[in-house]
Length: 100
Ligand code: SF4
Image (cartoon, rainbow, N blue to C red; front, side, top):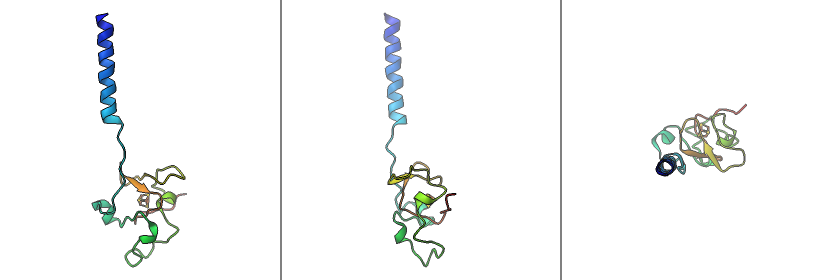
């Protein structure tokens, strides 16, 4: 009886630890984030500064970028550059590369 109670308590403790560390809502990348600023990230590809980024085209966005990890059709997803922050599927930055 005592040992099953101990197992129960250990299970509860382990579950609580998993909840506190493993389940976190991912936040959206802000355009003012230092890395985002340095790469000219915009959540809306139509708002990209054309003078600063002359190679940018309106057809380029995160959802068709090789570094985008979001699922097709989702409004946002992870990017290989920005770690745990989510980028908008409609976004763009100067590291954009055509998805093959
Ligand atoms: S690297 Fe690609 S997916 Fe990531 S923010 Fe830039 S354009 Fe979007």
